[in-house]
Amino acid sequence: MLVPPFASSPAGSGHSSASTLDVLIRGGGPVGTSLALALSREGLKVGLLAAPPRRDAAPDVRTYALNAGAVALLRELRVWDALPEDARTAVSDMQIRGDDGGALEFSAWQQGVAELAWIVDAAALEQVLGEALRFAPHVQRLTQPAPAALTAICEGRDSATREALGAGFEAFAYGHLGVAARLLSDRPHHGVARQWFRQPDILALLPFDRPQAGHGYGLVWSLPQDEAEQVMALSDAEFAARLQEATGGAAGRLEPVSPRAAWPLRVGQASRWCGPGWVLLGDAAHAVHPLAGQGLNLGLADVRVLAQVLVEARRTAPWRPLGDERLLRRYARERSVPTLAMSRLTDGLLHLFAQPAPPLRELRNHGMTLVQQLGPLKRWLTARALDA
Image (tube, rainbow, N blue to C red):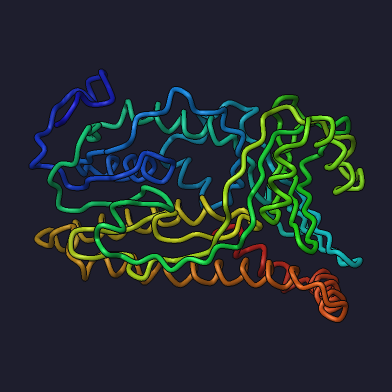
């Protein structure tokens, strides 16, 4: 059944019957809500089917690293500027270290951009997206599925709808967990993101202005499952000591200021991204290792391209149903190639640094240093990351 629209404002007060929905979106995360906002702006009637928030859910300690393409989309949706100032922090520089002297550094100034990325509070972004839905004129909240010309599946990595449709998901489990936490440093971060590639872990410190402006970090630490479980069981003091050892004090003295969260890591991609009347977006379509921070960027790029395809079709061929599979294949073709490329890049880097053999260690660290010395290659890599 349909329940009242998000908005009580005049723009969102009209009711639509279930039979008139253009798009049913399954999944209320950042990808699903962004798609609802994008399609609503184009006049499409959208139903959003999302699970209610869990009252016993632990605090969300995740941070998103958003590239220029993702930020541009959020600006268009009038979401970006609604974020609290301390919920988004610009990355001006990135320092990457290998496990045998390898070093690679990126600078926004050298690349001719204002910032390399933005680090965003995950919970704050989801809250602002939810608030924006209140003013979306054509979006209705659903408590159960309703008929629509197109069903957009944004349910995440374990999508039940994707499985019911028979869209296989070919995944490989790394046997690693991603550990996330919020940290406070006694030294200013100056907008510098830091990352260590080692065997067998990858640790990233993302500059963040919570809980204290200029001194916070979001931690993303990929560890083999047994080591990750040990880290999760440490006291805060023991965890701080482990971080100090792992970072060598490069970011100052780090103090945990949040609970820790962990989740299994894997790589994968759906064998089919679309079919008659349905399409996959975000983690329902693809999964990548978080070492490059591209997960949500890829999902928001899916949103941008699908919205463009549907709007163009309505303009040039209004007689064509939105769920026409030939139409949806345009989206799938445009998104599957860059997504697969990012997946192979992150997977390749992970496996390269997972090898303990001394010759491979020397080779990968030499490779990092070589890239550091090749300006055109660095600029190309930065451009790909800025608009994945």
